Image (cartoon, rainbow, N blue to C red; front, side, top):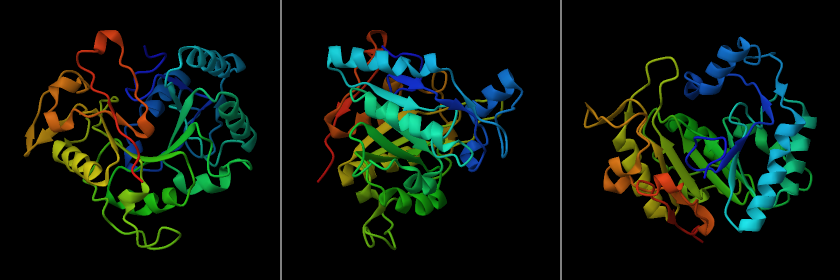
Length: 293
């Protein structure tokens, strides 16, 4: 069962610190910013705002999860920093160093670093990163084609066990067939540098959600299949449309079996699979798919 998270592609989430700055159209309805405004008056948000490091007892949860994962022999993905960004310039390097150390000390957990600042990542990796920690996945958020063409080449230059993109919230279609112009993957299609694609529609965060066209998700699912990489449909959000018409789903559209069959896909790379919670077993669809090549 999930622990302390509603994110469908992880089992747990852990915040090492709280606070960030909006840098993308995808940040306009940020749930973390809304939460900080509600509970802390927004004092941890924006340029120059102090980031808040969480208590040592919170960090120690990872040690307990690591022991449980080892005992059970299960795949235990953890979303690191739902309330912040690992590669935020305004976070002390010492905090990041402690996070890298935590990841190294918990090899039975798979850490997902989802970032809107992939351009900062390379210079903020630890000295012993090498070709990547085997239990750390790096995922760049790209909400539209402009961000994809700007950031996927930066992601491609990193070494990591798994590299993926999160089209969340999806604010436009993505064509991932474009060619990377420079670097070690020059001439290669962007999609061929990826291991995983996640997509989702926007949910309400105290404002009207933006439209999420299901055609965008269908296109990404087809592109993932053609490239033989994993595809994860997270949710439809609160304003999904199809052929220009509003489509109604329960809540934020997270019930898998309500979706069209081609989108009933929640795949993980590397042959790992997240076991659904018992009460959700009838609606959750999780497939195992290896990384190509």
